[in-house]
Image (tube, rainbow, N blue to C red; front, side, top):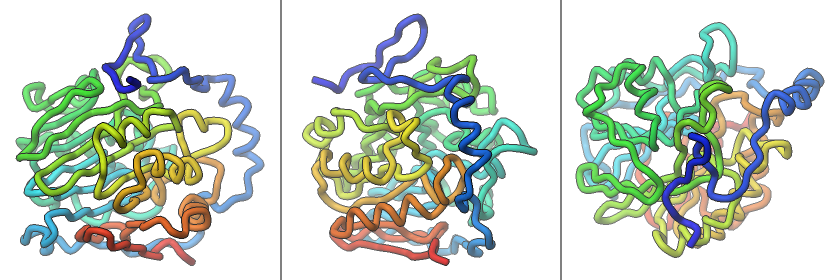
Length: 329
């Protein structure tokens, strides 16, 4: 049995299997690669404009499942009567600084004030590209339920979320949101918004199961044997969301990339549709910004991909792929 509660050693959460995480020494090794890199890591020409038609939210999804992908890992999931916002980052940069760090490729497709009524916000871990400080501070004004892995609640409180609105989950624990059961499961990653708080909070993937739909949100993860067990224990899934971007051979243990995502999807059972996440919004690696989706389409031509345009609310129809080419020149 690979799936279990999280373990701690010396006050630090551990990965489900042994995993080496790079530190300052790794940064020194990678820095010259960044300085000599010639890839188009940030779009040369403006993208979009991408706009969300908020009038569409006045009616529930006809299929019971509708997703609005805002780029990278931020998305709004409307599933079987519940509205759940996942890993929201409306901040201009995925960075501790307002003046430096990875900048958005395109503006947010709607304002935070224009988001429809929400039932919950789900956070996978506390990295800057998944937990936007200013985004959380703005949303903290709403009477929302916040669900996150262990100890991420401290970040949410620091950004203004009342403690009584926060539910923290260990791996294999669940919370119910408007009839949708959300279960936190292991992933192979790490946490921290700096070197001093690494591994002090937990990271997780999630299964979201309503009365009609079953979704796997893989969040950030390297490959590990647990995907097969997740598929057996919690699948099959109507829609599987896995990261394809911000990967490199130097950190493949914590980011799987498109090749790893294809393998993980097969391990999970390869049922239903595949939605690529963790790409298309921030420059977080050495590869060209389009490369993850191009590589995925190259190696998985028979996979039923579900990949909408940023900001476009789209119903998920069983067995029916959706492929927007918004990223093409």
